[in-house]
Amino acid sequence: MNILYNNDEYILKAIEKMGLWEYVKAKRILEELLTDEPGHGYAHYLMSVIYWYMMSDGERALYHGRLALKYSPNNSEIQRYYVTLLNDNGQETNAISRNMQMLESAAAGLEWLYFEMGRSFELQLKFEKAKLYYKKAILCTTDGSFISECERAHRRVKKKQKMSRTKTKKKAAPVVQAKPKPKKSWLQKAFGWLL
Image 1 (cartoon, rainbow, N blue to C red):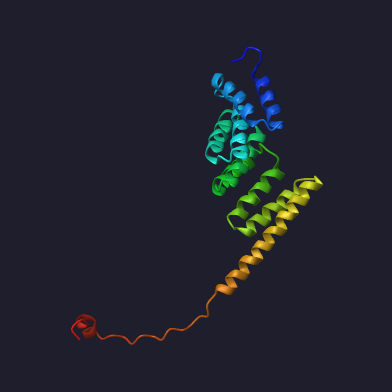
Image 2: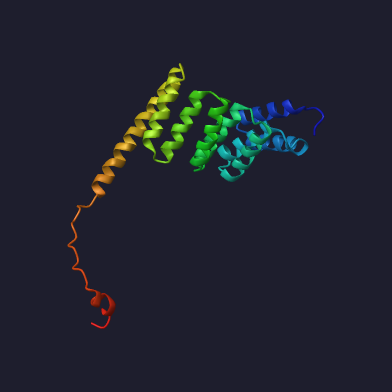
């Protein structure tokens, strides 16, 4: 480890590089920190952000996200990010269970948890539950822009729900009553292959 930096200085330097879109340099700084201190949760979180948003590598992003949670389990920023990461990587079921754990511990802002829960259910096409959680998110905040985001999400879900109902109505085939088959006698059943 470079003696000029302590852990916080590494993190600040990496964030500075990320802000300048110098993600390769930020990644090197974080790798240097993680070499000497592999249990630094926030460094794993930033590595996850780099892998997901800059390199589109969901597997490595999830790996570092899990390590970030392991080493910084009470950091609400990391918890919120990880749920979003799960949703973005098609793991809505895991996102829902993670969200439920966070709701029980109230480790993060309720409005955000409800919003992500709505998003998880929306991705699973469970529209009624999604609308319910988007409404709960609205009730937990006074932030106008967040309320607008929740309202847009709610309208989007209603539109998807309407579209899915329309598709199922068009696909439904008319019900045709089948004619009952005549009953076979015991002789036909037993020796039908001979007849």
